Length: 103
Image (tube, rainbow, N blue to C red):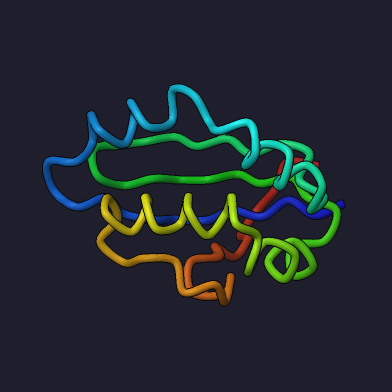
C-alpha cells in the first residue's frame, strides 16, 4: 500500500464550481478508482490550492489502469476546465515528497 500526496491548483474563481463538482463523484469513476487499487482519496482546499492524499495499492499501476478508462478520461477533461495545469497523466509532476512523519 502506498500513500501519495499531490498538489494541484484551481483557476481563479473556480473554487465553488470545483466543490460542487466533487459533491457527487460519478459512480463509474468511483468504480474505476476502486478497481485500479485506490483505497481512499481525500482532498483539502485552501483557496485555489488543492492537497490530495491518496491511499493506493500501486500508484503507477493506478495511473496506467486509468489512463484510457472512459470514466477517468471524461473526469480529467472536466477537471482540465477547472485546474490551472491539467493532469498530464505522468503522476510525477505534482507528487509531494514526504519530509517527516510521526512514527
